[in-house]
Amino acid sequence: MKKVLLLKFGELFLKGRNRHDFISRLKNNILRKLTAFSCKLEETQGRLILSGYDEAQEGIIIEKLQQVFGLIGVADALEFETSLEETKKRVAGLNFSGVRTFKIETKRADKNFPLTSMELDKELGAVVLDAHPNLKVDLYESDMVVTVEVRTNGKTYLYNKLHLCAGGLPLGSAGKGLLLLSGGIDSPVAGYLMAKRGLEIEAVHFHSYPYTSPQAKEKVIELAKEISSYCGKIRLHIVSFTEIQEQIHKNCDEEYMITIMRRIMMRIAEKIARANDLGAIVTGESLGQVASQTMQSMNVTNSVVSLPVFRPVIAFDKEEIMALARKIGTYETSILPYEDCCTVFLPKNPVIKPTVKRAEFLETSLDIDALVSQAVNNEEILTIDEF
Image (cartoon, rainbow, N blue to C red):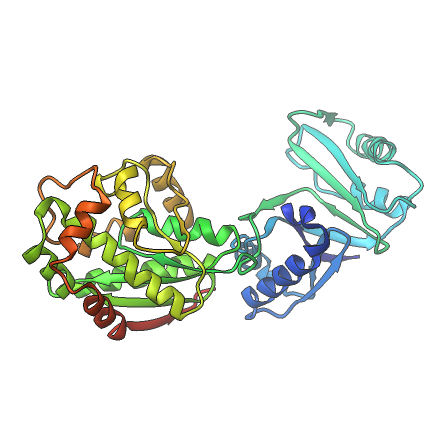
């Protein structure tokens, strides 16, 4: 008998012939997450088994695993050779202190085991009641759920607590994309959500020094570190947007300033994405939240790029986004009072229903190609890895 961590994955079961590739990527991500720990990772039918770790570090290891996309749960379990008598012995030896009601859940993956799941539930339930006659069985709202998994590797796993994990798909299994990372609440959440669907991300941040402060830049670097604990290594492209904003302010109608600014940002993002083999652009836009996020505004900004644009929080309201930001640990950094370039030269009445035709006309007063090329050529790139 030994102590192990039983790792569960969810929708990877749906991947058919590609399942092995997804599981292989998941295993690599787990081992990278646990580089600082001595441990052994093995695969059995539908489960991963982590063993050989220092039990004093179990808590921090579980916390690390909860940040690995693709895992839905981690159980600290007892592993022992499969036999009915040994299973009864281990179940009877569990600590039921403070428990009034319980239930047994058996998962019989090994169909050669002589009892069915329901038969084993009854046998083990009787063992518990014999050892603890004060307990009662409650199949619906029990104080303690005892789970027994009889696997095909000849081992049985026993646990009574499952730590929920991030879920989703293994990081990197859906390709790579470029996140427009501002200093606000929404874009870090957008990056997290796309990484949860397997997208490995790089990020681009636009700053307008001296209109924006060095603290505003440091804030974004900190946000990149915070989401890196979920999203893995992030290359952060920092692009100076000062001259572009000055040119827009000087040459374009005030109400269209945000629209033109967003269109140039998208052009820069696409150029960076294509140069780095990134297949999509990711933004934190939520439909109707501000003037630049109306359906018409997003259509006008989309029209300048050919890469797909993912907006994972498009249907979220602000409270939902804030709740998720708190959950992943970015909220407190996001609300620090340092401006970003979107607040520079902010018009009093930005257009909410812009047209492509009008935007294109206003852009004739700008040397768009030169402005985009200069911004990209002078980018600063930082590599952030808190995974």
